[in-house]
Length: 249
Image (tube, rainbow, N blue to C red; front, side):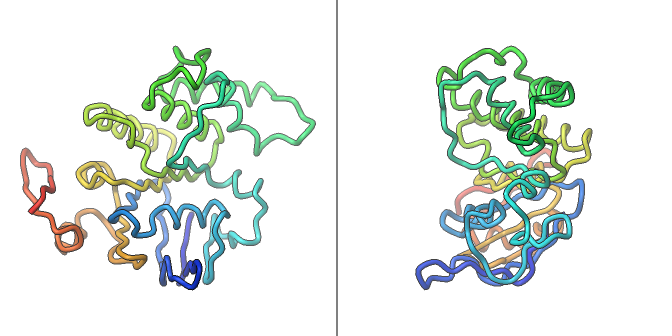
């Protein structure tokens, strides 16, 4: 699905990512975690094709550097951390997700229209379809952009800290909905997350970076057995009602 093999990213003679190696299993949710500046956004930027790299990144068994932007967009949909708010409706934004499947002169087909309507329904924002993005709250705008990448119809979705503008209750609702959608549609997700408690609760696997290096990759269960999160973030772990929580030590 998505594979990194001994991948490095160097910027201005500084090693930003070093020897990153992992392979995402299909139909799983992997949380990309690490302290600020650890390289999470750089890793996502490399998959977007915005950052040069050495080593290998393979997307559906094709080397990323050999794919056109259009071909990449047909394989992976990426939701960046910073979202613009142009004066356009939610439905118009979601239609942009169909762009990789259209030629420059072709018109949207019924398949495209159906994909847009289904994406609005899947994300639960049908009532927002005619609202303008610059009139929405941060959380509503986040969901509109999520619907856009859902409409893109790719097997892999990559999200960069999608719960940034959401309160705690809404973040849990968002992640529950995302997990349910992933399972219903058999999608593969890679999500950069700053909230460790959300990550260990909803992810199948964890990819932990520290100072540009891969510290851990594997199941949540195996990660918790190593105590690597506590050591990396200087946190304490507590268990309550069958859930794991991390608190400052």
